[in-house]
Amino acid sequence: MEISGVFSGLFVGIVVGALGRLISPGGRPIGCLLTILIGIIGAALGLALGTWLDWGFWLTFLAQIVIAALLVLPFSRVR
Image: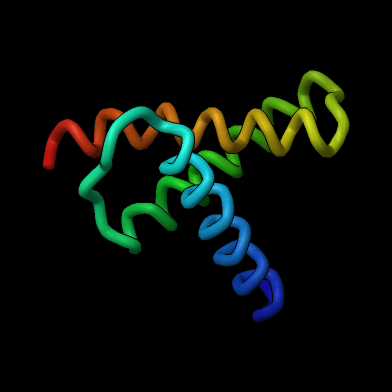
């Protein structure tokens, strides 16, 4: 894996995780690293879903954000 792939994965994780936290209801007291991890997982799952269903870029991006928002909920309840 190239270093540019790692940095782009982290960047996507930050963006998707932050947007997922923004659209989830209520304040979520989780840290930055957990937000990035949730964003990376949400982005990967959303990309797999969008590729499987042959969605375009924007619908896949929206699915990534919604999946990340749904993943934020159980982690914020634990803390």
